[in-house]
Amino acid sequence: VQLQASGGGLVQAGGSLRLSCAASGNIFSFAAMNWYRQAPGKQRELVAGISAGGSTNYADSVKGRFTIFKENAKNTVYLQMNSLKPEDTAVYYCSVPLVGVRGQGTQVTVSS
Image (tube, rainbow, N blue to C red; front, side, top):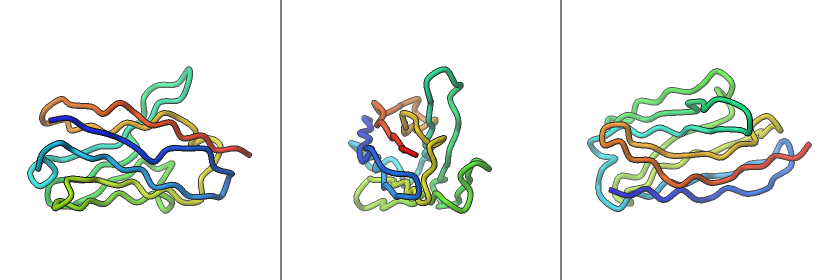
């Protein structure tokens, strides 16, 4: 399985972005998927996760602003990011822990 993350970019504070993570196979229907992020000089942070059954979890720092959801038929998981803050700036990765696969990452930059 391969994961392809996309949707990053440069946005002003308060703006929105939607990240996508497309899998090469039908994996999200039976495996959980996580979005992580890593900013320069900081540890990797688990941002959000979604189980095979659709249960979700979020880091406290993004609760109420980010939403993770998926479309199994498209083998794609999304991360809708609203009310973005400069501290959200990072490279965002998608990962499927069950198979130990991680996408290449997409840069999100939020300007103040």
